[in-house]
Image 1 (cartoon, rainbow, N blue to C red):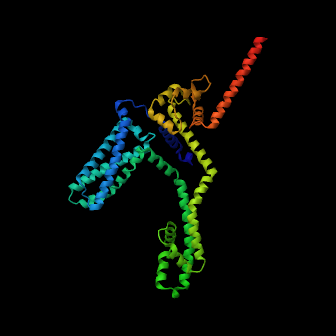
Image 2 (spheres, one colour):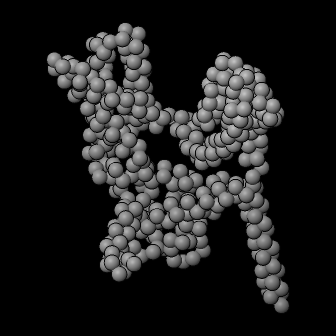
Length: 409
């Protein structure tokens, strides 16, 4: 189909362009401005400003609620304008240093997030100025109310600068898949029991409609009047948001096994979390699959890294190419994120080459060697090394004995 429509050349160009963009590597930035932006002092100042802005946002939002007024004190406006000005200056400096690589960097997601927040902050300042100058303030304040939602997102910038928070967020994101399927299972259980309770409640109300008191009938309509109301009742009973004893008494009036079914539902959902945790810990197959998937992902990242280091596109990496790459501090940080702590680049490259006299190492050998050297050495690695050293000593003793025998002969 692709060949018949003539789209194949276009798709090949798009794929080649994407591969080229993935292989791009930012050149080292060694000028004075780059050293200032990448310095720990500048990062510390940015961190302090972000945390101060978070506190200011919290206090200003609390003041507006207590006084029910859009006219916040002038010092809050001055602080907010100062923070926005600082963010604009920070963004401009980083754009000057990194240029187009600001949006194509290993931190490009955070960079785009910061860029959008700065644009929203500037827009907020413009709308606030127009609201103070225009007679019809209500229309501007409604628009400003929507933009002020971005203030909440500014609090997320603290996650980037605090390592512990960033680790917690990454841990939550890695567990979203398991959380999604847990929610699907809980929803399915609630839906099944809700359908059962809804049916027996409907049968009871139809058959006993003339003998049911009005308040009981209204309570049935309140708690089991529809599928969504029944699901809400069961959810609130699970989370303890109301006394489910009365809902149990209502279901017990049906005399169709509703009481036992309701109690079974409470016990089942109460034990779900504990058993789910135990099952997740004992699921070795999932752990093996996740570890294998992570290793494949790291290998793919290493291969893309090698393609970026290989400037000549020869499929091999020389010491000069590798030395040029690791001269950038951000490159060492990226390698550390892959589990490769490189303290002596020359020794590291020599170990990848091995005993070969060639001064180059092909990309596949480089990737395999890096995957073997990831992380700390385990006890098996140490025993393997000791075993190999023992074999070398034995071989040396055999050679020495053979030489002695030849000399004596």
